[in-house]
Length: 239
Image 1 (tube, one colour):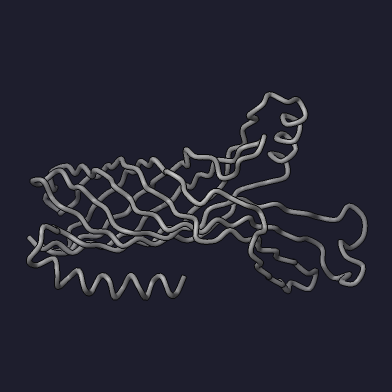
Image 2 (cartoon, rainbow, N blue to C red; image 1 turned 90 degrees about the vertical axis):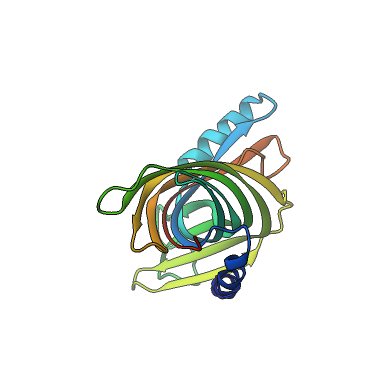
C-alpha cells in the first residue's frame, strides 16, 4: 500500500506539470475506507451447493479495507466530466472461528478466536461520467457519477489473525493457492458533494458502490465481489 501511494504521488506531480498543456482539465487523488463482501451463486442447481452457500453465508462476513486512486479528468462545460485513472483496492470477505469448548489450538491455549480474511488485491482502470450541479454561493455542488472499472487481480491471499485472551493479536498473510480469475469488470455508481476551496482546488466526499460482474473462480459455486466505499478526494483544476 505504501508503494502504491508513493507511486501515485510521483504520478500526480508529473500530471500537474503535464496537464498545463494537455487535454487534462483536472487531476486528483482519493482515499476510500471500504466495506467488502461477496455474492455466491449456484451454477448447476445442486441442492448440496445451496446448502453450502447457506452455510457459508452464516459463517462469512464483511471486512474493512482501504482503497486509493489517482484520477485525471476532462471537463465538458461546467457540469460534465469524463474521468479515468488508476486505482488500488483490496476486496474480499472474512470468516471467524471461535471454540465451543476450550482453546482452538492445544499448543496455544491463549488463542480464543481466529479470523481468516480472503483478500483480493486489484489494480483498476476506471472510466466514469461525473455530473455536477451548479455551484452554490458557498461553493458546494452535488455530484453523481456512473461508470465501469477494469480490474486486474495482482494478488490473492489469506490473512489469519489470531486473537489472544491477553489482547495480543498475531497476524500472518500467505498467498492463496487457489486459481482465481485475474480479470474482472466493476460497474459503479457514486453520489456526493464537492466543496470548492478556490478556483483551482476542490475536495469531494461521498459514498460509492461497485460490483464485480465476472465470477472470481470457475467452480460450481461462483463468487462475485462487491465493495461499498466512502470516498475522500482532492482535485486540482487547470482551467
